[in-house]
Image 1 (cartoon, rainbow, N blue to C red):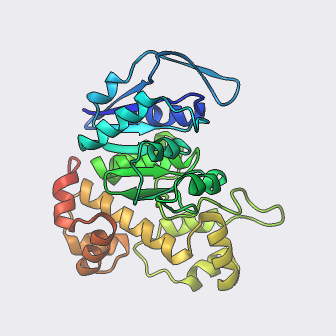
Image 2 (cartoon, helix red, strand yellow; image 1 turned 180 degrees about the vertical axis):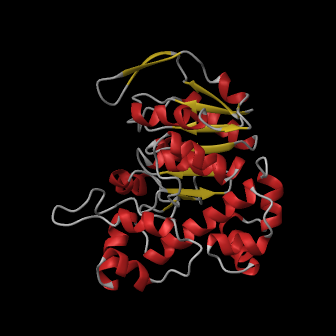
Length: 315
């Protein structure tokens, strides 16, 4: 059981605070939960939220000592962060625990000195303020989340879901993370480098989105899909397809296809005993050499090592 301590720093962003418990506690391997999530704070009691909601938190910061992962969620605090929170974070980092933040929780990690010299991100609307306060942090303001060694930071609100799914995927594999995403009715794979801004989160007023074309492509990942194929299905030009794809997903069509194919390969490695050549073919990556190359680039493991680490009841 992996223990996650979520530090609530008032005034808390209540949406952010709900994310880790909802996402991590939905993860299971062979029917057994794999995360124990505890919310804690420096001064237990009723904490003010950034809106009209208040939150009751009963656990103190001693929860952090027993945790494997320590997270700080969004907060409106800037100059009044409790020194006990900063000390607990520094101690956790020194102990080698995984440290993460959602949204403006990055301000707390930076105030504790844990982001100096590291790559990080935060909610785009607070990027200018963050950069001014913490010039030693290598801020990447246009991405969903950043992983720099044992420290992870995400952009605002829903990007926190992406971050939690990423950590589940790193701990237990793509199949477990995708099962959680389905329960949460959330996109299973949004890579960290995807843009925070999606120009067309909803279908445009005069026209349709490319959702049908993406669904069509997902059912044909084993086929040699080209930009021409995608444009033909969407009944548009390649130029328009590329522009609309990036507006709706934050990625080019071919980048999106590659992410889906690698994730399909990861699921097949985890849940089947298929040989590498067949997994490469079924996921659309072509050959075992190509599978190896892309998996190494994405997760730092060879297909054999990945299968050994994340096998889920092969069938």
